[in-house]
Length: 232
Ligand code: 5RP
Image 1 (cartoon, protein in one colour):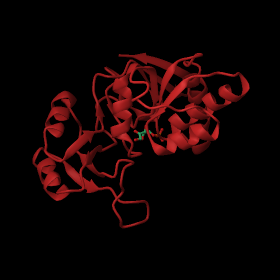
Image 2 (cartoon, rainbow, N blue to C red):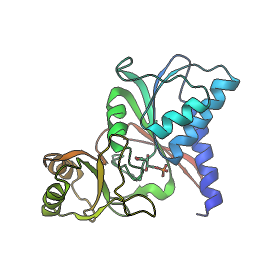
Image 3 (cartoon, rainbow, N blue to C red):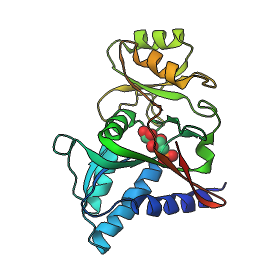
């Protein structure tokens, strides 16, 4: 799949993702480049069709993008229950729609937004589809900066090979919107994501893991044959 093709797929996903939103809905706005295409398409509908909805962004970057189109944003404090959240993902299993998310570093807010929503829809191109999680992507784990070295050791004990995430082309640690660090944890092929999720989350210092288990209702997958709809 070449770069031009990927851009085309993301634009298609943006339009179809945005078509799921109707007047007056409460909408969780995802993060990353594919979710950004959904926000741009929603922005066009906001400006050209007069679509109005309440948006809760899952990152500062998504908030800025939505605001640049004039989309009105709100918070989970004002709007604790959302009709839908639409987001990207890094890996999606064909069966069960289990996910790895967080290569963009927004996993904590994305998970909070997801669990505020009645329906969770993922937009991905077909490169992200896998039989089992862990085929191409480590599991991003958000940890507190305090004592992160100890947290890392505990993650290693449960089988992770870890890279501490740094800023692009910079030796400084990457920090999330919440000021936390990300440890990219390679567990190899993940046979039991439910168990692994529990093991990761039980470690002191872990704030959230990028495993999104049994929580996706639908995946829109762009590929050579158009857009496929996969359901859990
Ligand atoms: C950010 C995420 C993104 O949704 C994920 O990384 C997919 O991004 P992209 O659409 O750019 O491939 O989880 O934390």
